[in-house]
Image (tube, rainbow, N blue to C red; front, side):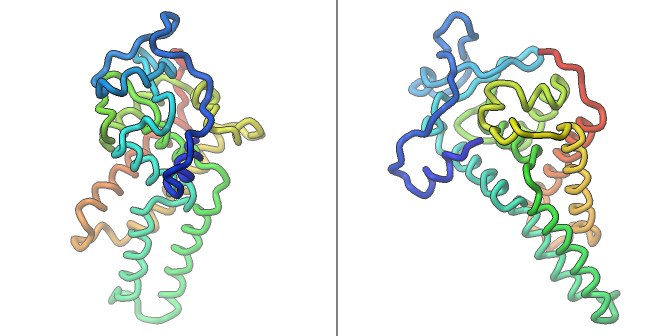
Length: 251
């Protein structure tokens, strides 16, 4: 999903990449978008899928996505490349610094052990093959309903969007649904149950977050980072519940 974003970011003159086949919102066979998208972009919005009692739409090409929303997609794409989001990387570095100055640590061996555990968990997360949770976050940028402000990206609004999706789809249904599957070609050859895979991924992520937050969110931590980490934990809790108790699909 969004592989094209990185090439656009590095090479602004690049032409639009291939898109999955979608039907224009003017086609009477699909719902017509009646949201608050800027007038000059409304004819570029097409129907994507239905979840629960809501219709979700998408832009017919990545280049039509408003700039601020586009940049949020790039941030999440960076998470996919790194295997970690910038907030966790900042927290990791902060944790290492706290370990080094922790008065409770009396000898070098204790410091080495704590740093070794934290570093191992970070590397474990980076090495993950496919992150379903990060692709879910990327989908929140890609797909929107008729009440969302598509000119920007509200993180809390999209945490609620993830909760709504998980309440209306089971895991296999969501990730293999069109047009989502079109952006995740690697899932075609997935030989494991997605529910079990997601359960393992979330367990791994939670272990990492628990390790990095064992020293607490110190007052020195920037409020923006605190908010980001709390949102990340909320998403992890939602995904964990989804993996443990898959919902009945209503689609």
